[in-house]
Image (cartoon, rainbow, N blue to C red; front, side, top):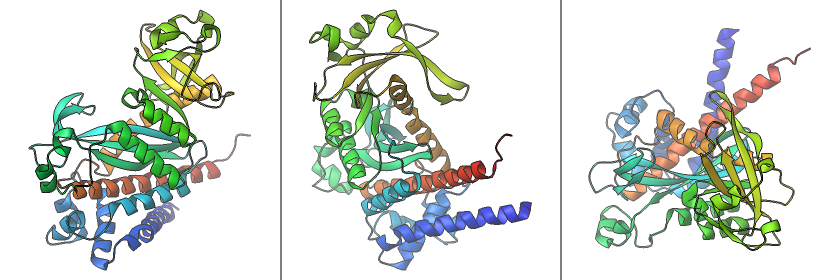
Length: 388
């Protein structure tokens, strides 16, 4: 029985990869890059310690890394079309009407000055200013799993203001400076246009305090729970109608009974319990739409608070807002698993297009792992007998 199970698992893996191959194969006009793309994804899913063109070529049986390097550089294929295929795959396999779209960024440490977008800039990955590239990502979370949907390479103004430097890195003249929230807006628009089912958007303070991003989310018909800094200014609704407050001031004015203990989801040590409170505030489309300022307070340290701007239907309960706020760390977990398991940060390319090609294939590999685990979990639930 054990051997049969092992054979079934291998067959399931092979069938899943064949599905991916069929999904993206049409994006490659020639058979050689098509086969190299599948081999690249297989290599990203392997146990190789470092997953770059050299190691993946060796694993695929190639005498040189030339084929894999061409796949990331000169071969004629569009990573944006493969990204669209990725979104269709994720929506079909993991889609849920209550899905959460999560925005965040991660750093890729680099040496030198030639890699597209590299600069001395703050990296949350390192927790300090480093010489690095920054990628802005859109992740999707549902009860079935969590994985990537989209990506953009952030280009500081030192790059976009230097046409010669951009040209040397393969950055076209049509690429202009965009802030990280502006990049997030474009990715959200694409996900909605591609039919990814979702209800919520969540992100950290970099994005939450950006009013144009909040407008865009509402225009797309989505609700949000977005972190904001303590000094975020809000206009109260209800009893304090029309008065302007800092976020911490409005929450401090709430009565003690406004606080409720709720779980923000499961963590390594069980439920992530905090105390939560919310106050009605004005928003972009007030009074036709409903807005809250949400606060999270540590149980052990009452001075440790976090704040969120929320927009959702009027009858949305506190617990649902808390659940969405607690979903945001899913993107950090996705960064960790993709860097550890599908080589997200293992690339050695310097060119702009090469970055998008490697990152997109790594995202595709991560989605495959997520879908495979989701199916396995569903099978286990179906075969586990219920308690008498």
